[in-house]
Length: 103
Image (tube, rainbow, N blue to C red; front, side):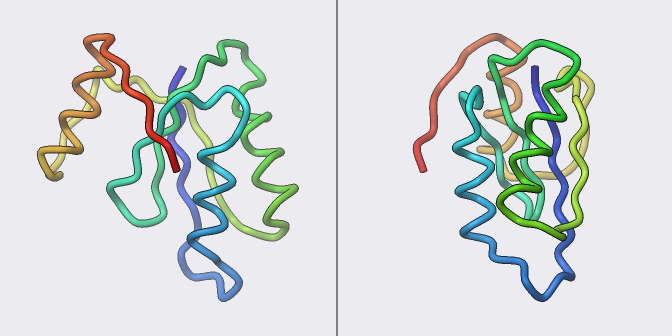
């Protein structure tokens, strides 16, 4: 399952490095996409209906007061203007090719 996480960029207490560490180390996250500021796609081995809650709970516990949205996404339905590496990541997920990023 893949989740889109959108963070509020206008908060004064926003620490990009700390939130990056939080998102990329959530248990079950196997890979991540972060080609746009304050936007992540988390690729997980998680598969039940409460997975978005697990992600949200981790963000809330590490960054109280941070405004954000977590939503499941279908990467097969996509369009936009992004760098080639970004599209490569997305297209590899659709084809089932997995690579693992390390923070």
